[in-house]
Image 1: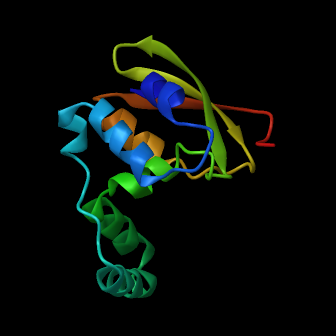
Image 2: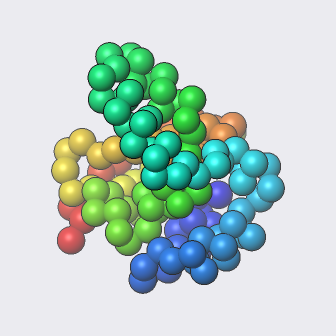
Length: 133
């Protein structure tokens, strides 16, 4: 799956046409895992609750909410200025090392961790390489 994303995400903007193309490319078992997009009113209400929640409650809220396809794809697109997926090394069944190009020491990798987890795997190490240009 990671290879597919590395090869299919275009260099340009993440448009609805690109999302539709990727949605057709991704396996049905994975697309079934995406949550339904929330409208603006629902998003504001959720964000308001999230801001007032404790850190442990925030994490639970995030896991419960899941990923909408467009939110998830953002992290693999050129618009993500935090990190780029540069490579994957399989250690054994289900365990991988990912190489990322990161803009900072801390890189928000939840979208990447979610994908590997849904594929039945586990990221055992993240190897940072030169910063994102």
